[in-house]
Image (cartoon, rainbow, N blue to C red; front, top):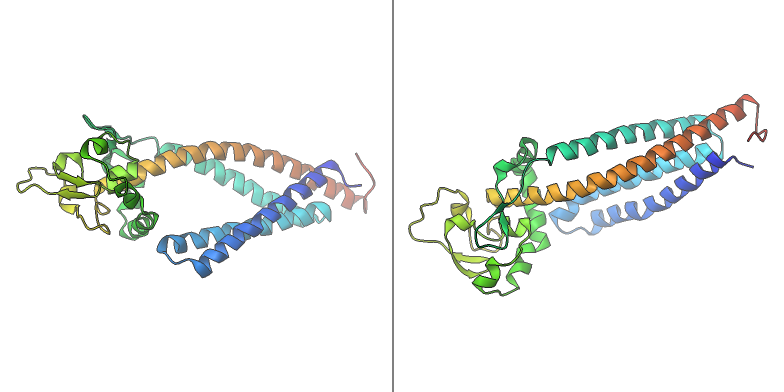
Length: 270
């Protein structure tokens, strides 16, 4: 009979292999059916993750159950790299998202966001025109501003609304511009604006433009990324502990394989 560590590694990798199938299928579906730039942007990473999980799980499965030591060694090496990279990413995520917070606006239920409040690394990512073109495409595809407009609120209802960072930064002009409210995404510019904020000139009532080119929109996206990355970092810590446990079990299975190979086959050691 197989030893416990080999059985556990085999079962875990079989489950991972099953998980990789729908992930890979989803990536292929996006590649063949994706109609928007946002969907096409996701297809590469999804396919890569699916193929990676499939190959690594097969290596662990065959290495543990068939006692192929070199495959199990390769599996453990990849797992070790994954643990190191995941740990580095988790630390990095906490560091780059440490700065930045929304600014409370007087007599408003929402906050407003400024690009300069966030880390330089994040600012460079959204200030890159190629990156921002993809992000903007995703924002338009998500129809986040259209859903806000469909609320048909009065001005008083609108200013008391708890807008998301993206809605606050991308779907309306900054409060300091002193625009006149018509509806959630239609505002009238004053004849003589004294504001030095470049976002006031960047605003356009065209639903395909709005404030998507504003610094406040980029800041709203970063605020959203910050919130998401904090959650991801917490999940990463849990995954990291799980991977370390799996890696430890894998080391036991590798030791079993080497011992069995040294004795010329399975000898029933405990």
